[in-house]
Length: 251
Image (tube, rainbow, N blue to C red; front, side):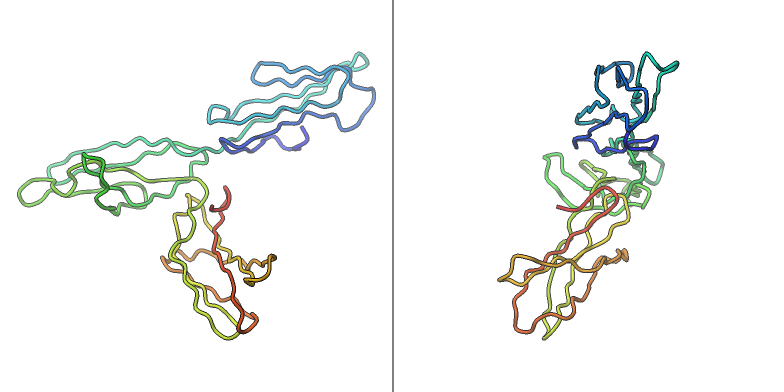
């Protein structure tokens, strides 16, 4: 495998190409075989096989074996890799009732198993969003009974929000202009379950080529700001803030 490692990484829904190739050596290869969990793809008289597909969560940990055969070789040459396919979590919600409270816990299952939980969403039985409810960092929502022994505050449906995906784009961005610099402020979005970093893209209004700021590390505060220095005075700039994590970049 050209990857040179025992693991090939991919993301569910994104095209992935596995390349089986003989880089060098003698004698020449007569048959090249790519085995995918027991299914063979054979290419005779060539030193290369390329297999492209769109992976799903079912492809995670699937084994690929590249084998080269020649009548002049006593034993075949082979290399094995496993797929590490990242996919969004599937959520299971469980509840526990006690005499004084109800405990609702969100159990996600995805790859990687590194989750960040957002606020729970409270919906009516008519599918209308009522409010967001803050739970614990581990995905648990605890609601206590009222004095009249009712749970009126959670009548309806509670939905868990968690992700291990790309971060949400920053919101409520504002720009304060000064003579030679701009102060840019924004609110952080959901980080997708991974540490996120922000970048500011900016360019002069009449120019097509822009620039990107140095990375701004997420300080876990709701509101974040950064300064763009050394700008041309009396010039209009177009500004955009985006965020990135280990999976990708915000839309």
